[in-house]
Image (cartoon, rainbow, N blue to C red; front, side, top):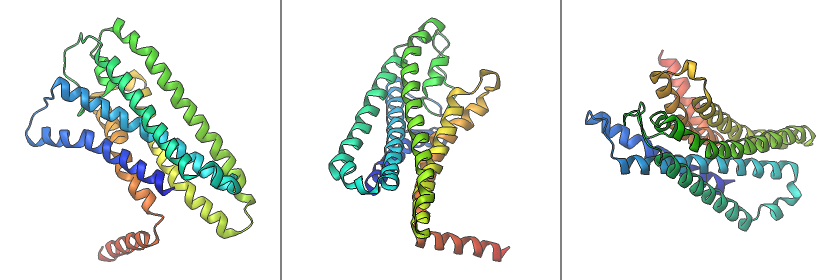
Length: 254
């Protein structure tokens, strides 16, 4: 679990460092310019870290499924070599996905200027500037990505159905509590990541607006990576005690 958490932390750090520093630089220097090369690099690394995070969240779901539903086979199915291979597969698939998406998106001719309505180079915003006929070339790659994403979602849902069916059969109350405390942070992170990303990319065009697009982009590109460490750290008893002392101290002052 901690090996996968380390990889997840790297994706969170990478996605934050891809978008936030440039946005802060533009804000401080009162500019909105980014070079074509800088935009390409930002788009690639953002897609890379987001894809890697989704793959790692799916692998972590499998880790929880095996540990709760098949505990006697855990050492066989999830040994150190198997974990390293799955992590490597997640990073490799993310690299290929980001490379194909970036190359295909930036190869489209721009017919509607070069001003993005966003604080970072995002694929949907670039597609809005492309020609309609050229946009059809992107549809095949998007369809493949959506199918892979839906496959991961179906796997996560199926795994959690099996987990929640198995937890009540655990004989000890301590064992049930440990199972829930292991699964709930992961489930919270997956729900936040999927809900924000899905609504940002699949919202109806009728409700689209620059302010809403900006808020949704912040919601799925900045908020989940920032909250993930806090969500997983809440399993630490010392951190929970410190948060509780901070909250009670604030209430007492008021």
